[in-house]
Structure formats: structure tokens, C-alpha cells
Length: 452
Ligand SMILES: Cc1cc2nc3c(=O)[nH]c(=O)nc-3n(C[C@H](O)[C@H](O)[C@H](O)COP(=O)(O)OP(=O)(O)OC[C@H]3O[C@@H](n4cnc5c(N)ncnc54)[C@H](O)[C@@H]3O)c2cc1C
Image: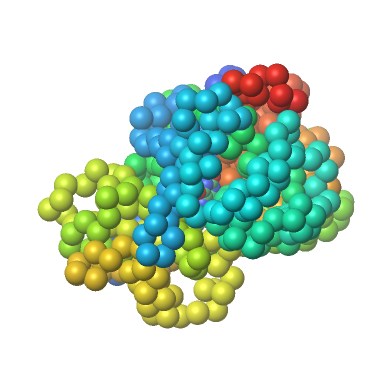
């Protein structure tokens, strides 16, 4: 039995059913995918989601999507454009030099950084050349100070990457996970840093994974919220919607708050439940804009020196015809400030900022707009959190945990979620690595330098 039909639960269910187990998957919402979801927005009459991106190093997520036959729905990009207000571009892309130098040429040319900034960044990146710290005690704020990064290097390089990937401020991110992002995506190989964007709304994008689970024999039940868990006669009783399900093995693939609630009902959950209090949830706000025409020739870009950090031209990514106009999504990560702001205020500020980068929006007609706030989008990899992320195997026989927040060595991401589900399935069969994909191999000079 798997409780929770997010990516962690789906990954666990697919792995176990593929291994011959009889699996039932219970999800409380009317669709699967958990936080990676899309829905029909009634007021906008549009299917909306908060843009999720994937990187080449997300081998477990990509493996699952590929296994389900949905790999071609990922649009891949080798270039990442950083835009300054006024429109000046810095394009990071591989140049043909071997890793870790593959991005060096574009880095050296990038006008968004001065020589002193680049020297400091290069020295900083060298610290992550062979890997990243095993311990997570230090905050990335301390690391930036310790390595003497310039103010502009922070604003134009470290911040967009770290806040975009880890969704919180430097004080709330450990150097370990920030270092992992730079090691995997900038240094280890060209493939690891490729940016993949789902070219369909998320629920549609993950639909083939649900179909795969069903093909493998998983019994799926939607609108089936579990409200109690009890140990009985050596097995487990799962209570949902006034029904009882009996199982030898339960994988709880719910978010940390729900897991805490469910574990409260199981005797002796004290230790793990108090560990779960260490988790901090961080918000993401997205602004959705539909225009009567194209306003940019780019599919996506990182925006510098503004609240908006990313722009995704979803109409371009999804290859809409020109007659449909255009659809942009603007992403504000770690949007603590926006949580307390009204939607009109967020929209007005976003539109003001957008004009600084894309003057064409002044001539275009804004047909409709929406603001989505996800207050609990991700958990923050605060320094010291690793000690409190539980293993998938618990102290109770037959009870396993999954979810991006469990011990995966990954931050709060779809890859972390799929890893956790596969690790939980491995713990169920007693062979931790059985369902795990191989990591992206180091390439170029990194074959000798990488210490993984
Ligand atoms: C706005 C936003 C942007 C993001 N951007 C990215 C990105 O660009 N790249 C990336 O990799 N990740 C991104 N993420 C993070 C990513 O979505 C999550 O890390 C991942 O989806 C977590 O999956 P999960 O299965 O661990 O948890 P969840 O998705 O939270 O799944 C838990 C599931 O359990 C169900 N559930 C809970 N309680 C019960 C119960 N009692 N009974 C039955 N079911 C229950 C829930 O309904 C849910 O379906 C983003 C998240 C958000 C919100």
C-alpha cells in the first residue's frame, strides 16, 4: 500500500509493482502528481501550473518519465540567458571545451560580470570542482563571505542559481546543497546542466506515469484521503474515507506535515515527529500573462536585479501558433514578501519589471492575467537539516517513508521525490539501490577530477 500520489508515491508504486508486488495507491486529491500538478483555473478558463524545470542530472526522474514513454514531452535547452534591465544578455552555453571548462568561454564573455567578479566566482567554483561538502552545517551566506564574493557576483551569479534551485535565501541554504547544484550543473559534465522544460501542463505531463503504474497492476484510488494508521496483528490498517485497508507494508509518501499527523496515531512516533518540526516550507509565486501577440523571441530567461527571477514563454515552449497570442509565466522564488501582498500589487510590480526587459509588452494587449501563490512549495535545506531527514526505513516493521523531504541527498525537487520513492521501494525489498538510476557520468577532464 502506498499513501500519497505525488511523484514519490508514484515512483514507489511503479518500482514495487514492476517488481511483482500487489500495490494499492491512495491519493486524497482528485488527481495525481502532488505539488507537480496543473488544473483548470475557473476564472481564467485556462489550464495553469507553476513551471517546473528539470536538469540533465535528474536521472531518476528522467528514467521514470522515459519508462512511461513521456520523455519526448521534455523540451531541452543547452543555453541559459541572463538578462539585465535594459535587455543586455549574458548567454551561458557549452563551447566544445571538455568539462569542467565547457562553460568557460561564455562565462569569460558574460557582460553581466566584471573581471573581479569572475575571478572570485572561478575561485569559488574551484572549491566544488571535485565534489561538494559531505556535512551540511555551514550556510551558503557564510561561504560567500568566507570566499570574499563581490556584491555583483552574488547578485548576478550565485543568487539567481541558488535561489532558483533551492528556493530560499543564503542563510537558509547549506553550502552542501548549493555546492551540489554548482558541481552537478556547471562542472561535472555538459549533460548534467542541460535545462529541460515540460512542454505540457504538469498533470498531463505526468499522466503517462500514472498509466504506467496502472499497466503494471497498481490499483489507484483518487479522492481517498487517509486519516488514520494503526498497527494490528503484525500488519497495518489504513483508514481512509470511512473504509479500512489492510496491508503488510505501507509506504507513507505524504508531505512532512501530513506524515507527522499520521505518525501521531502510531505509538512511539515521538522522536521522528519532533524531527519533522525542523522543516521549513518556502513559497513560490508565479504570475501568468496572456498577450495578444509575441513579446519575446526567447523561450525562457533569468531576469537580474528584479523580484522576478525567471520568465518562461510557455506559448513558445509549447509551440503555440501565432494566432493564439502568447503566454508568459514569471516566477518569483522564495517569495516571502509576496505572501503578504495582494494579487493586484504583485501583478502591477511584475508588469513594471517586465517592461524593463521586454519593451514589446508596452505595445501588446494584456488579454488576461493571474497570480498563483504556493505557500508551501518546497522545504528549505537549512544548515544542519540532514540530521533530521528520516531514512525511508522506519523503526516500525512494514512502515516506510517517502517524499522529497526524506533522506535523499537531494534538495526539494522532483528528482528528490522520485529518488525517495525508489529508495523506499528498495528498503521494502531489502536492497536499497535496486531501483535507483545510475548518476550522470563525469565527462572530459572531470573523469579524473571528480571524486564521486
Ligand atoms: C510552485 C512550485 C515550483 C516548483 N518548481 C520545481 C522545479 O522547477 N523543479 C523541481 O524539480 N521541483 C520543483 N518543485 C518541487 C516539486 O514539486 C516537489 O519537490 C515534488 O513534487 C514533491 O513530490 P512528493 O511526492 O515528495 O510530495 P507531494 O508532491 O507533496 O506529494 C504528496 C502527495 O500526498 C498526498 N497526500 C497528503 N496527505 C494525504 C493523505 N492523508 N492521504 C492520501 N494522500 C495524501 C498529497 O495530496 C500529494 O499528492 C516545485 C514545487 C512548487 C510547488
